[in-house]
Amino acid sequence: MEDQKLSAQESMALITAMIENSKHRVAGPNLRISVVWALLSIVTAIVVFIALLTTGNPAFNWLWLAIPLIGLPANLLLSRKCQTEAKVRTFIDRVHDGLWRTVGLVAIVLVPICLVFNLYGYPQAWRAMFFYAFVVVGLAAAVQGILLQERSYVFGGIFSVIAGFVVIAVSLCGIPLLVVWVLPLYAVCFLLMFIVPAVIVGKKLQR
Amino acid sequence: MKELDPLLHSQLRLAVMAILMNVEEADFVYLKEKTDATAGNLSVQLDKLSVAGYITVEKGFVGKKTRTTCRVTEAGKAAFGEYVETLKEYLGL
Image (tube, rainbow over the protein chains, first blue to last red):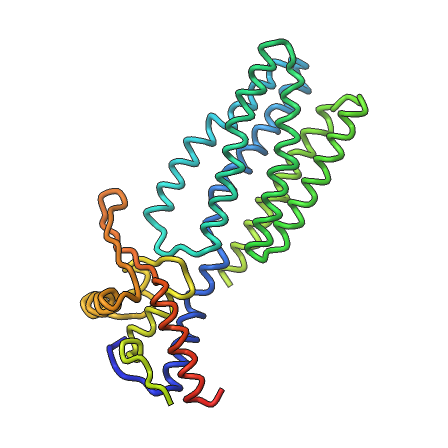
């Protein structure tokens, strides 16, 4: 492109072309970080599920801590990599980052709170993390879907929020939260909230 | 009929402004890719837009690499808006 003068028609065509040219980036902030967190959550849920079903030892619940212990360094690494790759930043990128930073901050504060409850003999406080994962993360996934105009995120998010309310209702009614259905439900929610939509978005961007 | 802003009425500068109006910030490499301009020419045009107060150009580092980030200013947004309105008048839209 040179520094040449344009006619009015050429100017209008150029503006339209440049907006179109930079538009597809607006629809897709980096989704790798959310996929890594989702995969980590699903794999941990499966490992805990198998361990609890085969041994019945509740100590295996400590494996949940693998999510923040592996996820946080992985997140830092990936976001550093994204920073070196990113060439453009849009309003959607800013809102997307702010949304997930807020969700992450809530989790960082919730884990020590649950740990303190656990130390004082109330391990059932960890259920709050389940509610967080279903409801708060689900709501954020739905908002992400609205931002990206991607219905699969909205669907996955709504599914997770509803599943979360069912889990809360069951818990409040005093019905035991059985590993046999809660953990598979947890894994399915993360699959629907992040993995399936990321695959759909990836295919759309390829096209 | 109003005159078209001569600073924006140039292919490369207008392309840069159109991109920056669509995003919050973009770096030099991105602008170079999207406009298909040479580094030297783009650099000169960015400087002109910056001197006019239409964009801000921030030079920084990401790791060991330098990165030049451009953002459109409020004055730039107003000038671009006015330019498009004048264009519409010219085209009878």
